[in-house]
Image (cartoon, rainbow, N blue to C red; front, side, top):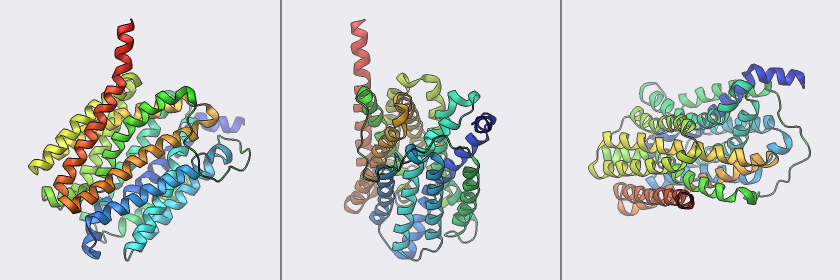
Length: 400
Protein backbone atom coordinates (compact mmCIF):
# COMPACT_ATOMS: atom_id res chain seq x y z
CA UNK A 1 0.00 0.00 0.00
CA UNK A 2 2.85 2.39 0.88
CA UNK A 3 4.57 1.79 -2.45
CA UNK A 4 1.31 2.36 -4.32
CA UNK A 5 0.64 5.60 -2.47
CA UNK A 6 4.21 6.78 -3.18
CA UNK A 7 3.81 6.07 -6.90
CA UNK A 8 0.53 7.95 -7.01
CA UNK A 9 2.01 10.93 -5.17
CA UNK A 10 4.73 11.17 -7.81
CA UNK A 11 2.06 11.80 -10.44
CA UNK A 12 3.11 9.52 -13.30
CA UNK A 13 0.22 7.05 -12.88
CA UNK A 14 -2.15 10.00 -13.13
CA UNK A 15 -0.50 11.14 -16.37
CA UNK A 16 -0.43 7.58 -17.75
CA UNK A 17 -4.17 7.16 -17.14
CA UNK A 18 -4.89 10.54 -18.73
CA UNK A 19 -2.77 9.66 -21.77
CA UNK A 20 -4.58 6.33 -22.19
CA UNK A 21 -7.89 8.20 -22.01
CA UNK A 22 -6.74 10.64 -24.72
CA UNK A 23 -5.57 7.87 -27.08
CA UNK A 24 -8.67 5.72 -26.63
CA UNK A 25 -10.95 8.66 -27.41
CA UNK A 26 -8.72 9.83 -30.28
CA UNK A 27 -9.24 6.47 -31.96
CA UNK A 28 -13.01 6.93 -31.97
CA UNK A 29 -12.95 10.03 -34.21
CA UNK A 30 -10.09 9.14 -36.56
CA UNK A 31 -12.42 8.16 -39.46
CA UNK A 32 -14.34 11.47 -39.49
CA UNK A 33 -12.47 13.21 -42.35
CA UNK A 34 -12.20 9.93 -44.29
CA UNK A 35 -15.92 9.36 -44.85
CA UNK A 36 -15.80 11.39 -48.06
CA UNK A 37 -13.03 9.15 -49.40
CA UNK A 38 -14.95 6.02 -48.38
CA UNK A 39 -18.04 7.42 -50.13
CA UNK A 40 -16.13 8.01 -53.34
CA UNK A 41 -14.53 4.57 -53.23
CA UNK A 42 -17.64 2.52 -52.46
CA UNK A 43 -20.45 4.84 -53.54
CA UNK A 44 -22.67 4.91 -50.46
CA UNK A 45 -24.92 7.81 -49.43
CA UNK A 46 -24.65 10.48 -46.73
CA UNK A 47 -27.33 8.61 -44.81
CA UNK A 48 -25.05 5.56 -44.69
CA UNK A 49 -22.37 7.76 -43.12
CA UNK A 50 -24.72 8.66 -40.28
CA UNK A 51 -25.70 5.00 -39.83
CA UNK A 52 -22.01 4.05 -39.57
CA UNK A 53 -21.61 6.75 -36.94
CA UNK A 54 -24.75 5.61 -35.11
CA UNK A 55 -23.37 2.06 -34.94
CA UNK A 56 -20.46 3.53 -33.01
CA UNK A 57 -22.82 5.27 -30.59
CA UNK A 58 -24.80 2.05 -30.18
CA UNK A 59 -21.59 0.25 -29.23
CA UNK A 60 -20.85 2.93 -26.64
CA UNK A 61 -24.31 2.60 -25.09
CA UNK A 62 -24.19 -1.21 -25.00
CA UNK A 63 -20.79 -1.13 -23.31
CA UNK A 64 -21.95 1.45 -20.78
CA UNK A 65 -25.10 -0.49 -19.94
CA UNK A 66 -23.37 -3.88 -19.66
CA UNK A 67 -19.95 -2.91 -18.36
CA UNK A 68 -20.19 0.65 -17.06
CA UNK A 69 -20.07 -0.56 -13.44
CA UNK A 70 -17.58 -3.44 -13.95
CA UNK A 71 -14.53 -1.45 -12.83
CA UNK A 72 -16.17 -0.96 -9.42
CA UNK A 73 -15.86 -4.76 -9.01
CA UNK A 74 -12.74 -5.88 -10.93
CA UNK A 75 -10.66 -2.71 -10.81
CA UNK A 76 -9.90 0.15 -13.17
CA UNK A 77 -6.79 -1.28 -14.84
CA UNK A 78 -8.30 -4.43 -16.45
CA UNK A 79 -11.15 -2.40 -17.93
CA UNK A 80 -8.79 0.23 -19.33
CA UNK A 81 -6.66 -2.50 -20.94
CA UNK A 82 -9.76 -4.10 -22.48
CA UNK A 83 -10.79 -0.71 -23.90
CA UNK A 84 -7.36 -0.21 -25.48
CA UNK A 85 -7.45 -3.73 -26.97
CA UNK A 86 -10.81 -2.97 -28.58
CA UNK A 87 -9.44 0.33 -29.88
CA UNK A 88 -6.53 -1.51 -31.51
CA UNK A 89 -8.91 -4.07 -33.05
CA UNK A 90 -10.98 -1.20 -34.48
CA UNK A 91 -7.88 0.34 -36.07
CA UNK A 92 -7.01 -3.01 -37.65
CA UNK A 93 -10.51 -3.21 -39.19
CA UNK A 94 -10.11 0.22 -40.79
CA UNK A 95 -6.57 -0.60 -41.87
CA UNK A 96 -7.81 -3.54 -43.95
CA UNK A 97 -11.30 -2.23 -44.82
CA UNK A 98 -12.45 -3.25 -48.28
CA UNK A 99 -16.13 -2.36 -47.94
CA UNK A 100 -18.94 -1.51 -45.56
CA UNK A 101 -18.80 -4.70 -43.40
CA UNK A 102 -15.36 -3.87 -41.98
CA UNK A 103 -16.34 -0.20 -41.54
CA UNK A 104 -19.35 -1.24 -39.47
CA UNK A 105 -17.25 -3.74 -37.50
CA UNK A 106 -14.55 -1.18 -36.84
CA UNK A 107 -17.04 1.42 -35.66
CA UNK A 108 -18.78 -1.10 -33.41
CA UNK A 109 -15.49 -2.08 -31.77
CA UNK A 110 -14.60 1.60 -31.43
CA UNK A 111 -17.92 2.25 -29.70
CA UNK A 112 -17.39 -0.63 -27.29
CA UNK A 113 -13.93 0.75 -26.51
CA UNK A 114 -15.29 4.23 -25.82
CA UNK A 115 -18.09 2.82 -23.66
CA UNK A 116 -15.62 0.91 -21.52
CA UNK A 117 -13.13 3.73 -21.17
CA UNK A 118 -15.40 6.75 -20.67
CA UNK A 119 -16.70 6.21 -17.16
CA UNK A 120 -13.77 4.08 -15.99
CA UNK A 121 -11.02 6.44 -17.16
CA UNK A 122 -12.85 9.49 -15.80
CA UNK A 123 -12.94 7.94 -12.34
CA UNK A 124 -9.42 6.46 -12.64
CA UNK A 125 -7.87 9.83 -13.48
CA UNK A 126 -9.61 11.40 -10.49
CA UNK A 127 -8.56 8.58 -8.13
CA UNK A 128 -4.92 8.56 -9.32
CA UNK A 129 -4.47 12.32 -9.01
CA UNK A 130 -1.67 13.29 -6.61
CA UNK A 131 -2.51 15.73 -3.84
CA UNK A 132 -1.30 18.78 -5.78
CA UNK A 133 -3.61 17.90 -8.71
CA UNK A 134 -6.64 16.83 -6.68
CA UNK A 135 -8.60 20.02 -7.32
CA UNK A 136 -8.03 19.87 -11.08
CA UNK A 137 -8.51 16.11 -11.54
CA UNK A 138 -12.05 16.35 -12.91
CA UNK A 139 -10.91 19.03 -15.37
CA UNK A 140 -8.01 16.83 -16.53
CA UNK A 141 -10.40 13.90 -17.06
CA UNK A 142 -12.86 15.90 -19.13
CA UNK A 143 -10.06 17.59 -21.10
CA UNK A 144 -8.57 14.16 -21.85
CA UNK A 145 -11.97 12.99 -23.08
CA UNK A 146 -12.74 15.97 -25.33
CA UNK A 147 -9.10 16.56 -26.26
CA UNK A 148 -8.77 13.01 -27.56
CA UNK A 149 -11.99 13.34 -29.56
CA UNK A 150 -10.69 16.55 -31.13
CA UNK A 151 -7.21 15.27 -31.93
CA UNK A 152 -8.56 12.33 -33.95
CA UNK A 153 -10.02 14.35 -36.88
CA UNK A 154 -7.11 16.81 -36.87
CA UNK A 155 -4.51 14.04 -37.08
CA UNK A 156 -6.42 12.18 -39.79
CA UNK A 157 -7.19 15.32 -41.81
CA UNK A 158 -3.54 16.40 -41.98
CA UNK A 159 -2.20 12.91 -42.77
CA UNK A 160 -4.93 12.15 -45.33
CA UNK A 161 -4.41 15.46 -47.14
CA UNK A 162 -0.61 15.69 -47.14
CA UNK A 163 0.82 12.18 -46.49
CA UNK A 164 0.71 9.03 -48.63
CA UNK A 165 -1.84 6.21 -48.23
CA UNK A 166 -4.57 8.39 -46.65
CA UNK A 167 -6.79 5.44 -45.70
CA UNK A 168 -4.02 3.47 -43.94
CA UNK A 169 -1.25 5.59 -42.45
CA UNK A 170 -3.29 7.16 -39.66
CA UNK A 171 -4.37 3.76 -38.34
CA UNK A 172 -0.77 2.53 -38.23
CA UNK A 173 0.08 5.63 -36.19
CA UNK A 174 -2.90 4.94 -33.94
CA UNK A 175 -1.77 1.36 -33.27
CA UNK A 176 1.63 2.64 -32.13
CA UNK A 177 0.01 5.19 -29.80
CA UNK A 178 -2.31 2.53 -28.34
CA UNK A 179 0.67 0.25 -27.63
CA UNK A 180 2.37 3.01 -25.61
CA UNK A 181 -0.88 3.67 -23.72
CA UNK A 182 -1.29 -0.02 -22.86
CA UNK A 183 2.26 -0.18 -21.52
CA UNK A 184 1.51 2.81 -19.29
CA UNK A 185 -1.72 1.31 -17.95
CA UNK A 186 0.06 -1.96 -17.13
CA UNK A 187 2.44 -0.03 -14.89
CA UNK A 188 -0.09 2.08 -12.94
CA UNK A 189 -1.26 0.99 -9.48
CA UNK A 190 -4.80 -0.31 -9.04
CA UNK A 191 -7.14 1.96 -7.07
CA UNK A 192 -9.94 -0.55 -6.47
CA UNK A 193 -9.73 -3.79 -4.49
CA UNK A 194 -11.45 -6.53 -6.49
CA UNK A 195 -14.39 -7.82 -4.46
CA UNK A 196 -16.63 -10.12 -6.49
CA UNK A 197 -17.62 -11.02 -10.02
CA UNK A 198 -19.85 -8.25 -11.43
CA UNK A 199 -23.31 -9.18 -12.69
CA UNK A 200 -23.12 -9.13 -16.51
CA UNK A 201 -26.65 -8.04 -17.20
CA UNK A 202 -27.94 -4.75 -18.60
CA UNK A 203 -27.35 -2.04 -16.07
CA UNK A 204 -30.38 0.00 -15.15
CA UNK A 205 -29.86 3.75 -15.28
CA UNK A 206 -30.20 4.12 -11.54
CA UNK A 207 -29.41 7.42 -9.91
CA UNK A 208 -29.58 7.90 -6.13
CA UNK A 209 -32.80 9.63 -5.14
CA UNK A 210 -31.03 12.45 -3.33
CA UNK A 211 -29.21 13.63 -6.47
CA UNK A 212 -31.84 13.05 -9.19
CA UNK A 213 -32.73 16.71 -9.63
CA UNK A 214 -29.06 17.57 -10.06
CA UNK A 215 -28.57 14.65 -12.46
CA UNK A 216 -31.51 15.67 -14.68
CA UNK A 217 -30.23 19.23 -15.03
CA UNK A 218 -26.73 17.98 -15.87
CA UNK A 219 -28.07 15.43 -18.37
CA UNK A 220 -30.25 17.98 -20.19
CA UNK A 221 -27.36 20.39 -20.62
CA UNK A 222 -25.05 17.56 -21.69
CA UNK A 223 -27.59 16.23 -24.20
CA UNK A 224 -27.72 19.50 -26.13
CA UNK A 225 -23.92 19.81 -26.17
CA UNK A 226 -23.26 16.23 -27.21
CA UNK A 227 -25.83 16.43 -30.02
CA UNK A 228 -23.68 19.25 -31.40
CA UNK A 229 -20.54 17.12 -31.09
CA UNK A 230 -22.34 14.33 -32.92
CA UNK A 231 -23.07 16.65 -35.82
CA UNK A 232 -19.46 17.79 -36.12
CA UNK A 233 -17.93 14.31 -35.81
CA UNK A 234 -20.19 12.71 -38.41
CA UNK A 235 -21.56 14.92 -41.19
CA UNK A 236 -19.63 18.20 -41.00
CA UNK A 237 -17.20 17.11 -43.76
CA UNK A 238 -20.27 16.45 -45.93
CA UNK A 239 -21.67 19.91 -45.12
CA UNK A 240 -18.30 21.44 -45.97
CA UNK A 241 -18.20 19.72 -49.35
CA UNK A 242 -21.83 20.02 -50.45
CA UNK A 243 -22.84 23.34 -48.84
CA UNK A 244 -19.62 25.30 -48.36
CA UNK A 245 -17.72 23.89 -51.38
CA UNK A 246 -14.63 23.02 -49.30
CA UNK A 247 -12.88 19.72 -50.16
CA UNK A 248 -9.59 19.99 -48.24
CA UNK A 249 -9.53 17.16 -45.68
CA UNK A 250 -7.14 19.05 -43.40
CA UNK A 251 -9.65 21.92 -43.26
CA UNK A 252 -12.42 19.48 -42.39
CA UNK A 253 -10.30 18.00 -39.60
CA UNK A 254 -9.39 21.47 -38.33
CA UNK A 255 -13.04 22.59 -38.20
CA UNK A 256 -13.96 19.52 -36.14
CA UNK A 257 -10.89 20.04 -33.96
CA UNK A 258 -11.90 23.66 -33.31
CA UNK A 259 -15.13 22.48 -31.68
CA UNK A 260 -13.25 20.27 -29.24
CA UNK A 261 -10.46 22.80 -28.66
CA UNK A 262 -13.02 25.40 -27.66
CA UNK A 263 -14.79 22.80 -25.54
CA UNK A 264 -11.55 22.47 -23.57
CA UNK A 265 -11.33 26.27 -23.29
CA UNK A 266 -14.92 26.29 -22.04
CA UNK A 267 -14.01 23.69 -19.43
CA UNK A 268 -11.10 25.81 -18.23
CA UNK A 269 -13.46 28.75 -17.91
CA UNK A 270 -16.05 26.56 -16.16
CA UNK A 271 -13.53 25.74 -13.45
CA UNK A 272 -13.27 29.45 -12.65
CA UNK A 273 -16.98 30.19 -12.91
CA UNK A 274 -18.19 27.23 -10.85
CA UNK A 275 -21.04 24.82 -11.52
CA UNK A 276 -23.88 27.25 -10.76
CA UNK A 277 -22.89 29.65 -13.51
CA UNK A 278 -21.31 27.21 -15.98
CA UNK A 279 -24.40 25.06 -16.60
CA UNK A 280 -26.77 27.90 -17.58
CA UNK A 281 -23.96 29.91 -19.18
CA UNK A 282 -23.00 26.97 -21.37
CA UNK A 283 -26.59 26.59 -22.57
CA UNK A 284 -26.80 30.29 -23.46
CA UNK A 285 -23.51 30.18 -25.41
CA UNK A 286 -24.64 26.99 -27.18
CA UNK A 287 -27.78 28.78 -28.43
CA UNK A 288 -25.58 31.51 -29.89
CA UNK A 289 -23.36 28.90 -31.55
CA UNK A 290 -26.37 27.22 -33.15
CA UNK A 291 -27.48 30.57 -34.54
CA UNK A 292 -24.06 31.10 -36.16
CA UNK A 293 -24.03 27.57 -37.63
CA UNK A 294 -27.52 28.08 -39.04
CA UNK A 295 -26.36 31.36 -40.59
CA UNK A 296 -23.35 29.65 -42.16
CA UNK A 297 -25.55 26.99 -43.75
CA UNK A 298 -28.02 29.57 -45.04
CA UNK A 299 -25.27 31.78 -46.52
CA UNK A 300 -22.80 28.99 -47.47
CA UNK A 301 -20.15 30.79 -45.41
CA UNK A 302 -17.15 28.80 -44.18
CA UNK A 303 -15.90 31.61 -41.85
CA UNK A 304 -19.32 31.77 -40.19
CA UNK A 305 -19.30 27.97 -39.76
CA UNK A 306 -15.94 28.24 -37.99
CA UNK A 307 -17.36 30.96 -35.73
CA UNK A 308 -20.34 28.74 -34.96
CA UNK A 309 -18.05 25.79 -34.22
CA UNK A 310 -15.94 27.90 -31.85
CA UNK A 311 -18.91 29.37 -30.00
CA UNK A 312 -20.84 26.09 -29.80
CA UNK A 313 -17.72 24.26 -28.63
CA UNK A 314 -17.19 26.77 -25.83
CA UNK A 315 -20.81 26.37 -24.73
CA UNK A 316 -20.55 22.60 -24.78
CA UNK A 317 -17.37 22.72 -22.71
CA UNK A 318 -18.89 24.97 -20.06
CA UNK A 319 -21.92 22.75 -19.55
CA UNK A 320 -20.07 19.44 -19.94
CA UNK A 321 -17.44 20.17 -17.30
CA UNK A 322 -20.04 21.40 -14.85
CA UNK A 323 -22.24 18.35 -15.50
CA UNK A 324 -19.44 15.82 -14.94
CA UNK A 325 -18.12 17.70 -11.90
CA UNK A 326 -21.45 17.87 -10.12
CA UNK A 327 -22.36 14.26 -10.90
CA UNK A 328 -19.03 12.77 -9.78
CA UNK A 329 -18.89 14.97 -6.68
CA UNK A 330 -22.39 14.14 -5.49
CA UNK A 331 -22.36 10.42 -6.35
CA UNK A 332 -21.80 7.90 -3.51
CA UNK A 333 -18.21 6.59 -3.68
CA UNK A 334 -19.29 2.97 -4.24
CA UNK A 335 -21.58 3.95 -7.15
CA UNK A 336 -19.52 6.67 -8.79
CA UNK A 337 -18.64 4.73 -11.97
CA UNK A 338 -22.26 3.55 -12.29
CA UNK A 339 -23.74 7.04 -12.06
CA UNK A 340 -21.07 8.51 -14.34
CA UNK A 341 -21.81 5.80 -16.89
CA UNK A 342 -25.53 6.61 -16.70
CA UNK A 343 -24.73 10.24 -17.53
CA UNK A 344 -22.65 9.20 -20.53
CA UNK A 345 -25.37 6.83 -21.79
CA UNK A 346 -27.68 9.81 -22.12
CA UNK A 347 -24.97 11.89 -23.76
CA UNK A 348 -24.22 9.22 -26.34
CA UNK A 349 -27.92 8.89 -27.10
CA UNK A 350 -27.65 12.59 -27.89
CA UNK A 351 -24.80 11.86 -30.29
CA UNK A 352 -26.58 9.06 -32.14
CA UNK A 353 -30.31 9.83 -32.44
CA UNK A 354 -30.09 13.42 -33.78
CA UNK A 355 -27.31 12.45 -36.22
CA UNK A 356 -29.43 9.67 -37.73
CA UNK A 357 -32.20 12.25 -38.10
CA UNK A 358 -29.86 14.61 -39.91
CA UNK A 359 -28.81 11.81 -42.27
CA UNK A 360 -32.39 10.91 -43.09
CA UNK A 361 -33.33 14.55 -43.57
CA UNK A 362 -30.31 15.09 -45.84
CA UNK A 363 -31.67 12.45 -48.21
CA UNK A 364 -35.18 13.91 -48.10
CA UNK A 365 -34.58 17.67 -48.15
CA UNK A 366 -30.84 18.12 -48.73
CA UNK A 367 -27.96 18.77 -46.33
CA UNK A 368 -28.58 22.52 -46.00
CA UNK A 369 -32.20 22.16 -44.85
CA UNK A 370 -31.31 19.19 -42.64
CA UNK A 371 -28.62 21.24 -40.92
CA UNK A 372 -30.97 24.17 -40.38
CA UNK A 373 -33.60 21.91 -38.79
CA UNK A 374 -30.97 20.31 -36.56
CA UNK A 375 -29.55 23.61 -35.33
CA UNK A 376 -33.05 24.87 -34.57
CA UNK A 377 -33.88 21.79 -32.48
CA UNK A 378 -30.63 21.93 -30.51
CA UNK A 379 -31.09 25.65 -29.88
CA UNK A 380 -34.62 25.01 -28.56
CA UNK A 381 -33.37 22.24 -26.25
CA UNK A 382 -30.54 24.41 -24.93
CA UNK A 383 -32.93 27.32 -24.37
CA UNK A 384 -35.41 25.07 -22.53
CA UNK A 385 -32.58 23.75 -20.34
CA UNK A 386 -31.46 27.29 -19.60
CA UNK A 387 -34.96 28.25 -18.48
CA UNK A 388 -35.16 25.17 -16.26
CA UNK A 389 -31.82 26.01 -14.64
CA UNK A 390 -32.76 29.64 -14.07
CA UNK A 391 -36.21 28.99 -12.56
CA UNK A 392 -35.02 27.69 -9.17
CA UNK A 393 -32.60 30.60 -8.89
CA UNK A 394 -35.41 33.04 -9.58
CA UNK A 395 -37.57 31.35 -6.97
CA UNK A 396 -34.77 31.48 -4.42
CA UNK A 397 -34.26 35.17 -5.16
CA UNK A 398 -37.95 35.95 -4.54
CA UNK A 399 -37.82 33.98 -1.29
CA UNK A 400 -34.85 35.99 -0.07
